[in-house]
Image (cartoon, rainbow, N blue to C red; front, top):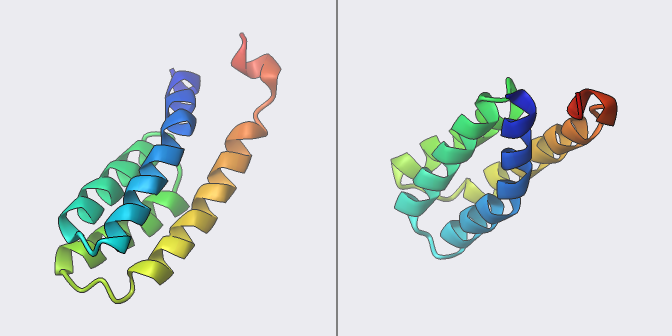
Length: 98
């Protein structure tokens, strides 16, 4: 089950990041909150801690309606996502296929 969740997460990440980037660019707090919330939940389902925290901070920023910090929070989220995706890629194929 974990590996299926990880696969779905990895496949969906590029779109989630693009949606968050678009929401920040258009200053759409509602869409930013929604996409950050979804990414927070899906990464938490994998047992991650950094991505949910970073996505949660971005979600809170959007909920407040003050997007002044959104770009900085987004950069932190991207860094956490890079770490998580690297960790997921490092899982040995032998574990994935058994």
